Image (cartoon, rainbow, N blue to C red; front, side):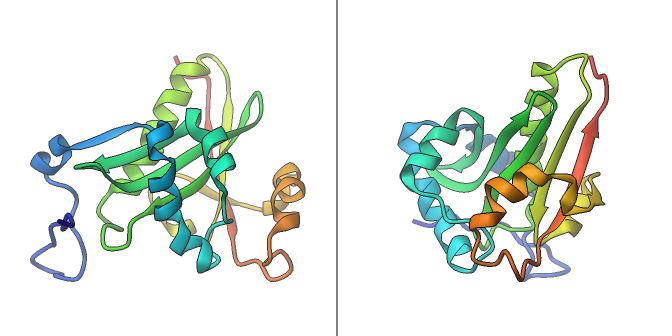
Length: 182
């Protein structure tokens, strides 16, 4: 039976933030091997639309140690991955939330979990985390700032060079800098 998000009274077409009861039934956790097929299934429609780069099973598996999922009743509603480029440079990749659950706070919760754990891991350092996205307003709303894509040449060389949209890219870069936290 599919899980149905709650909706606001003011705008019945827009899901509301998860209720305390829903959050208790949900699990925000790091992905494991049993999640690979579910992650691929969640990301597939976004890859077909050209919103995400298509990932194969091997890539999803190699990303598991830094992949967070939002799981409700054994259904993955959202996923996000943190990729390390350098000691102080990370990228949020593959942020996906199941259609029908978008704008319910799941994406924000996934990002906050990745950043919280990164802060614990990298105490005393200044860390930059970036994302290339077609929805920069989402990231800006949660405290990120827009920057030029060219600031991340390794990303462009490693991934963008192989993207079908590389010559007609609509993605924008955003970043958040985490300073000397304890």
